Image (cartoon, rainbow, N blue to C red; front, side, top):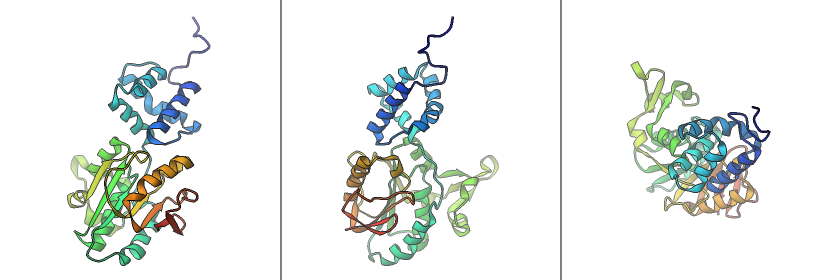
Length: 275
């Protein structure tokens, strides 16, 4: 017997159900999932339907939206918010840190940086390599945060495949990374001393920020593109109390804070200073 016209082919999702997930993700994380991401949603969540013995996306939506299973809802958020990153991404920002920010820092104080959407840890470890090189073993701290518990676990391990080394200066690679041997061949590990200097924590940027900081620099790169203007204002307003006056707020090269806040002054494209 033929399926009713309203039935969805296996492995597909109706426009109505996709819209429900769009609204839920926006509610939970402030992220707008574009219609072009429907294939991504289906690909990432299908295995969760199978794991929970469900056959329809509508059933899975009821599960994660009900609040009855917070762990499954977090898993959904993890799967839909995980983004690609790499070491020393957008190197001009790291050059600015080395050449402009660090030479002007106040002596005798702890220099602190917050990587606000750190994903699997490449950005905070890139920052840590620079600070260990320029400032030594003490006098600085780094916090890396993300909404995804899954990527934070990967970040804490500091274990990456060798193809991820692109962008790491050779001197830093030799000094701060351990090449895998035997069963770990083809991978490398950020050394224990550097891993111990970076604190990772879960933070949802659209909710009140925990009492962390204050920070000299906040990196929030390549995540604002997923927020609408209202959410950008909320996120920046939540984060700015954790930035010191005169501190730097750095966004990705495809992003801008124009019209988002009056508390930041544009020093140059993507680099802002708190008034």
